[in-house]
Image (cartoon, rainbow, N blue to C red; front, side, top):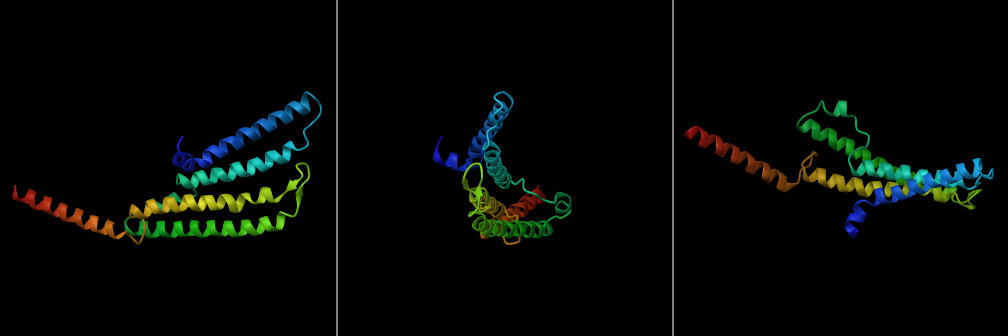
Length: 183
């Protein structure tokens, strides 16, 4: 696998490893509790920690594939410029929300890092750093999608070459009409 492919799919790769690890830990906990009558005291905390990261990575995957929360029934009522205005507004709200998640998550991490997870004997900051860390990854994926949408002309402000292409398309359509009329 080349590096670009790994970076493009980092959420899926890390998420799959974390999920498999979490699943193995939970199976081990069941076996130790039911068969050996000696539960693993650290397994629940580690499973919760892994679940936190796996869930957050899932949200990042959703952002990357444009599957984040979107009010389709309202959005689909628009057309033309209204659609571009609605898309610009919605994407602006998502962008601001991601920035807020990073800021709030970082503040939460700073407050919680002084506490310790009892069984694992590590800082609870490891659980709370997931929010700003993966929200930053979501922001990167969101910006990648935003750039694609911008180039596709889905916003109020369009790239200059897109309007030139539209003008050229209109000229080509008008030329075709003239040719058809001549026939």
